[in-house]
Length: 344
Ligand SMILES: Cc1cc2nc3c(=O)[nH]c(=O)nc-3n(C[C@H](O)[C@H](O)[C@H](O)COP(=O)(O)O)c2cc1C
Image (cartoon, rainbow, N blue to C red; front, side, top):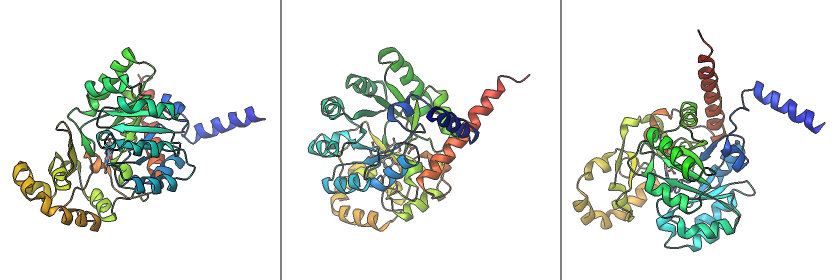
């Protein structure tokens, strides 16, 4: 009876167009759809992570720069839902108790971005969590492979937030080739500029096992981003975003020089671009005002962190709707491309 029921479910899911995108990622994470939501500082709380997982994908809480109280609240908010937790590696390295704290919640995976993952891999693996590493080039990919990462997230420069210089379209296949040769059991996930089924289909075509989406999930009902920032994302196009360091100087965050961050190119960025030395002289005095403006949802005087995918964000809907749409679109594209082979 169970076998018959399973067979019926498969047929039924096929009929609904919701079954075919099974990849190594869906197997590894035991999820329905090959999609991960990014661990976005201050935006990816337990509610968003749980909504993504409950929508059939995999949600991550954003440990960001590291705030123990926030982390506790948000990991608890996700309840028993199967989620992961992500950290900005260089920030967490200064307070590794945060990693231990996150692991105590028994996350399915820990994602480390921006910094050397190797010193933390053993603790993560010993706790039984998968290790996901976000990488930006061959050097960072090499570190992740050496750390024994289960999944590499190859992040292109189109991405919202911090990153480096390589474009998703070339980085992903290059990293897939590198991994196939050196660590064939390691999965590759594409990130940067992916916001719908076109991006998912393209990523699979490039050899990725799935996608990680940040900006698109940032602009959802469950995201903790300020509602005015979400509304701004709907109004923006990819043309309106820029990579810069103004917002890090404003916040006093000491990022390694190879990283810049993509945000809305607003009045703050235009005022200080190319004037880092001058901005540094005034930044400390302006800092309190900056964080107040951020809390107030100001969109011109703070970093509105969104990537080139802004041009594909047209509404604020629940995360599950984004997942459903993305999968339906990707399936339709793949079916259409598949049928091309048989024409004429
Ligand atoms: C609002 C926002 C905040 C982010 N914060 C983090 C973070 O704290 N840690 C992290 O690893 N990545 C962070 N990222 C980057 C994502 O992990 C991911 O690389 C990116 O969102 C993918 O590109 P996309 O925005 O085009 O989907 C952030 C991205 C956004 C949009």
